[in-house]
Image (cartoon, rainbow, N blue to C red):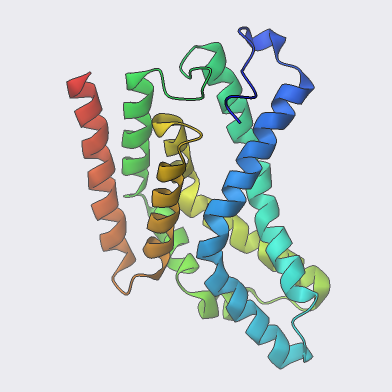
Length: 216
């Protein structure tokens, strides 16, 4: 994609087609990175629907689409951030990071967020699908959609800072995408205390950011 599309030199030269290209890219990335970690919740929801309604269709489809819609909205924010970063020359034409301090700041921000109450509360809820279904259940198709939105917002609260790391390592860095996806999946499924996972990852991210500042 980076070879077919180059960002305009000026922030004011961006056309709607430029925004559309970047938005679609981010939306696809969000879906690819977040759906694997949501499969456990989706399966639990489908099982519950089959028990209650005799079928999980169309409820699981509505739930999944609602979940993704939260990340699609967040993709608008990421698109606007990329627009600004290009205008400041903090990203190259190949969408790679061009500012060490930006990369370091993103790593440190993501690391610090791992220690916050909001992060660990959202992570705990993402790791407990049956608790979510018990406490947030809503009947009918509209209820399925609402539950998908609620879970999507919870998941966003857990992982939004990790998504910013793509600006630090290169927006189109496929290897980094795979690693982040794997980390998010393990963070939500490893049979260890979620606070321990968050603090360990937070320390590593802060160390990485500090190393970039020191080496730069």
